[in-house]
Length: 240
Ligand SMILES: [Zn+2]
Image 1 (tube, rainbow, N blue to C red):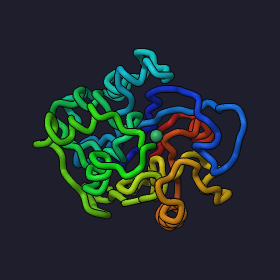
Image 2: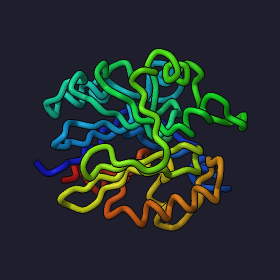
Image 3: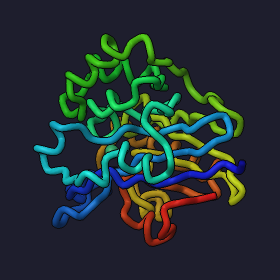
Image 4: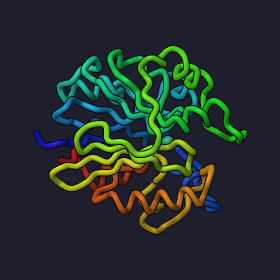
């Protein structure tokens, strides 16, 4: 079986332009929240778990068909079949109470992300304390801490892509269509990487710019976590 990647639209919201593009202003623009299903011969792998109930009271919109269990069912999978989940970072639109929907999964998290989320040095940090508590308590026995790049299944590699947060990671996957990279919030929108526009929300701009370079080096195809343009470029949301 060739590896396939499926984009899962988990929620919609509107985002201030200054978060996406450094120093730009304007009305908030619509963005999506994507998670990803990697259908791999060693077993299905998920990238991020999406928003939880608290976010749905805070400007994120989601209907029942957008929940990850509903979307997995459409691909013939149940949440119990998910053995590996890569958590790109611990911000609430990527990791949340939705992790509880996957009772058999282990969660790959950069050690640097867990440390920063537990003890950030910036007052603007995007973490829900309850979610960080889940990592160090409720889910602790199923968390795999990662240091840097690591192959977690044949041809599926975690890439450390710091900048937005110090412990942000993406995933690169070999498919029949080339190497697909899911860079998470190291690349908010296609314009960021294609026009080299720095992100507005980054804990380190130099790291963020270096991560753009790393994504370009690895990727034949980039699948962003927030840009609705993904579905213009890949209308079925399926690659491979
Ligand atoms: Zn995000």
